[in-house]
Image: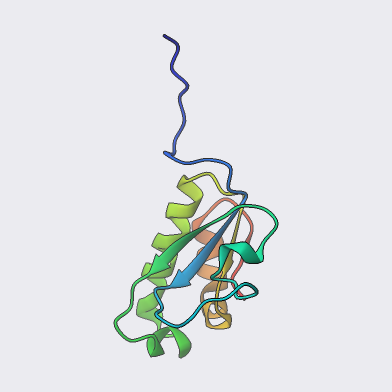
Length: 105
């Protein structure tokens, strides 16, 4: 039996989206709703008890955002986007931490 080797347990996702774990209604058109896109996307959540540090660009959040982006890269995405404009605070550090295009705003 031939084995196909790869680096991820999932495939076929061109774009990965870094998002906050939220609890509000998500409808088509919202970036956190996968049916908003014609092609498959995959998500990686940044878990924060309080989202305000992200919204204010607190430096300590960067490690969590970078970790989420690296997980998406390891899953084989070809580009990473942020699901909230506040992720733009972390554009530079995330772009320096992965080897694929990053669009955090």
